[in-house]
Image (tube, rainbow, N blue to C red; front, top):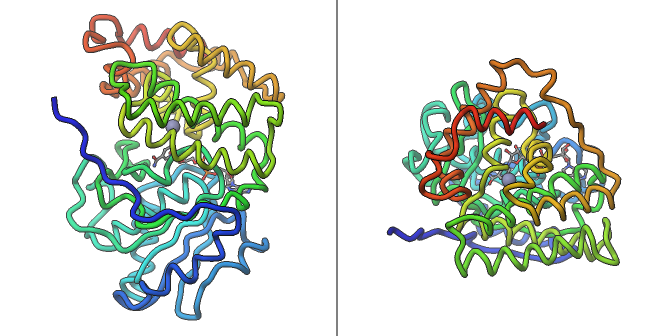
Length: 360
Ligand code: NAD
Ligand code: ZN
């Protein structure tokens, strides 16, 4: 057995107001390459107070990106890379300020600035040839764990797959939960549930181990405080907790694996373009026979926060669409292997997975 030998984020700042340290953190890096920084910021912050707090110098580039129309694409990354290189050359560094989508855009663009050709050529494990530029992640919504993962998930012409390698990992993250205060309640719920599901799936499978469990259990405890505790809901204390839970949930799955819900979620994203965290929620509510305890808790959380998920969706899906989603899910072998066991192919078939989609 080969044990994973993984790289962590180089430097981490945690605390309310820590965003104010960004200027000082960037200072020593500003002499690298052509001597300018690129800020990639969620369009939500355009015209908001945070825009004025971005420590951009006159030579820097600031891009506001609308992440709502679709998840990050290879084409979008190539365009942004080409534009930056054509405008000013190779930047000293790139800073992403936003949610999982912006984290992935920042990580992918940092890599593609130094790796020639279209980013679809690099979708997969260790295909990137050279380290990217210095890159910093500043999450503004908590849950995906994208701040600590070694992948930048992109939707390409052929597949939805990450640029996955050690160089993808941020050199620096700034965890300032003050930035998450404005997240609307539905997004707070869906993205936070990504963390909860990471922990349940990481735990309930054959690859779980003392290392993944230590992070996963602590993250689960935080999720229970945030979504079910006496002080449940969006408040400063819980915002702090969810930011840490997201990171720890990410570390837990890094050293274990996700499972059936994520496999189904990839199908929903690929065929219907559903957003990752919402797609997870759509699937997870129906997986009580695989994750009895996790789904029961999840349903209690839904009720407590008055979140109503649609059901009966599959009535409007064609057999061909359901079959296509089942193929996407089936091909994520490592997830089924973890969730069901090494003999999963004797138990799980395309027809079986189609049945799971028909529950939705
Ligand atoms: P997101 O980045 O897609 O943003 C969700 C919504 O929240 C957007 O409308 C955004 O504008 C808004 N928003 C963000 N911060 C806000 C704030 N402070 N106030 C108000 N609104 C705010 O959300 P996400 O759920 O964090 O990320 C989903 C993406 O992450 C997907 O593209 C998925 O593929 C990716 N992902 C990546 C990894 C990884 O390891 N790389 C893991 C899981 C998911
Ligand atoms: Zn996830």
